[in-house]
Image (cartoon, rainbow, N blue to C red; front, top):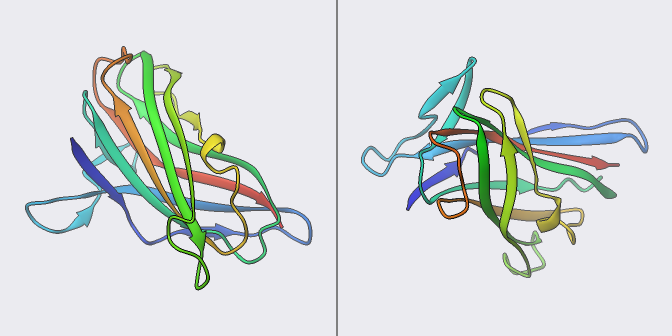
Length: 167
């Protein structure tokens, strides 16, 4: 099983009082041979982590700002080289910084399905594993491409995670 780790350069866009805010984190590859953390692909000028056909895992970390009030949405953004169905699992563990263990909360979604159309920026709804998040939670996310149940014949580019929230 391959491993992909996200970079620590999270983009935060916060709205006005009561308006929406946004977190964005991209996926990058942890190259076991070189030790460098970098994108291993580019699609449409976007750095991406390539998920080859088979069981493969990507990871990402997010820090929820103190201004967070409630979750609006959270999506993984992907591009597939082919049409088909992606069967996936997602897992999170998180805790409030400086007060809780890193896995104080855990959430899992198994054997989920998302239809992909070749070259379309596809949003995979990950809100089911972010149900209990709160301000100042530090989140670890694992996303698994399952070979069983998937019909996509080819690579998938993992672009990043977009989390929108009310402030």
